[in-house]
Length: 163
Image (cartoon, rainbow, N blue to C red; front, side):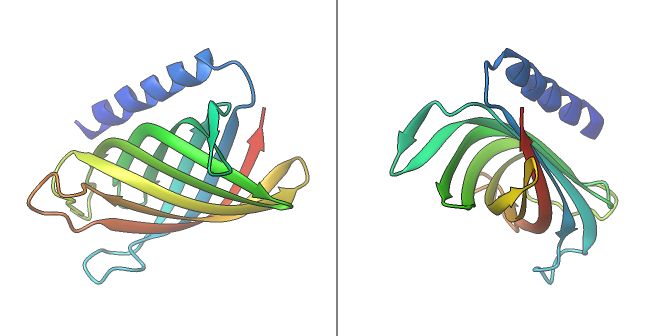
């Protein structure tokens, strides 16, 4: 079931990416999840975030669509799509996203209440060669959709590039 959810959401994200016209970005991060929770086992984690060209501006932030995934060494998998926003402050870029998606617990049995989970993400990056080097923090929870809502946190060292 986990593989089916992941493939379905990743397939949707890939089809959205293929239809976009320009200024797309990929960001990948390596880090850890569970380090900030006494209930969750710490595990190495990987994130991937794709963002489309900006669709508009609000409060100085360029916003548009995005898609992402998160997978950890325990086999926990999340994949989804939603809104992404970013703002450049000279050399520093602040990025924010909120993306509903599907989650499946792996071998650590990190249950988050149900299969529909929302991932919010905050990232800070600086120009580095042809890309951007940064840090991100992500939180996955169901926002009260289910009775149980323990949440899950992760921190990443990221590298991204536009194409």
